Image (cartoon, rainbow, N blue to C red; front, side, top):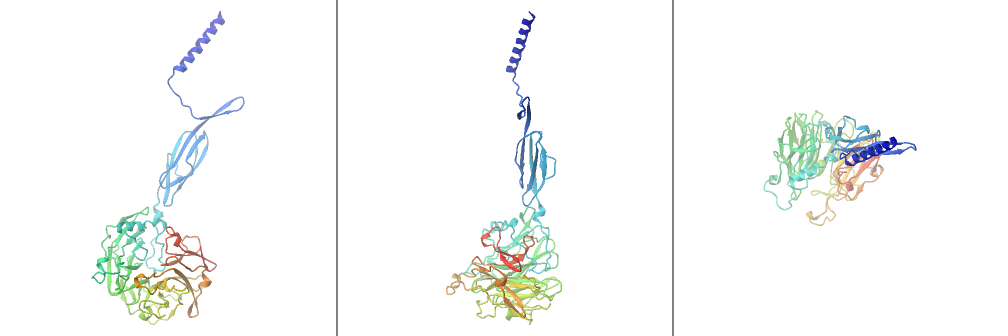
Length: 515
């Protein structure tokens, strides 16, 4: 009897348990688990999700996944160029390299912000010569400058030295933009005004900010008239206030009858503003020039050279005022020169003047008296000073000097002169009408070495690749531009945007080796 009652009671209990399970509406979600069978027993391991992401400005080493409880995961946050890591969203850690031990579901995101220091640069000493002040004008992080100006003017902005200057003009550590749109392309109709005022446009000013962005400078923008064709710009602190000033070398319309143009400068006022000065006493077909302390009195002077009809000038700086004079330079030597540089070639403490134009031909001369030359300085002027004519082009029809560079390539204590050249100006079809010729085609490099009292062409000994069919090179510079300890020579083409036309050599064993 007792056994029967016990059996009935057991059945009743089991029935109640089954009914309760089937009628319960609550749902319990257990953590994911792995079941490990050890033979006699099994172990359940919980699993959790890890979600990792990156905010704008960087990346992370993993996006996460599902991991066993107790798993350690290393995560690295890497900022993009121009950004810096500032912390994690979902974690108190400030380190960009963290290790998480998984014990629950985790969502974490790397946080970044713009690194303002990346966009800053050290303001140069504006008392240096123009040769020493060179900077790469269009590095990758400033490639938007051209687009900025295109959007304003609706046409192509142009190259440095023509109408776009990238420089920190307000000394805040960020590069700014000064630019104006050249308009010299009309081959038929000239404006009535001699200086072409109807075709000039106002100078534009844009202030740089953190992040490489630019905003219109309301203090200066559209308040100063530009030039018809600003052929080259010279930068320096001419008025001695600690801020950069800009001197525009201009030649006007590049068409017959080549009326020429005066030069002008915009000077800083020391408070972020600019005022302009126009040098209207001398009008000519000016092309090139350079700045430096010609008379060794502690301030910046400058020299500009013209293309064949007027007078080359020396501007001596007296108390922050530039006084132009044609009496400080030999006009017979300086005629028909398109480019100039100031550099102490003989190491006597005085800047020397190096000039170049057409070797073989120009609009007003057919003689060889326009060969490039060196005029040694004496700390006073360039009148009646010793000079050396430089060899003509080493490549046929590459007779126009477009740029000078200087470097002791073989480390023998003597500076070599490196000339960049282009077509001789006649064009491929010199019998065609003037406006139908293909001028200034191709490029070449020439290396000159001083021997006694003359410079000899040593191109073949110093450089392995020195001519090509790419567009002409406006300038070359020798610098350790990537800070790797190896000196490079490179051209003006932006390597980030035009790799096909970018040229670079490295100085290896005293020679320029094409890369």
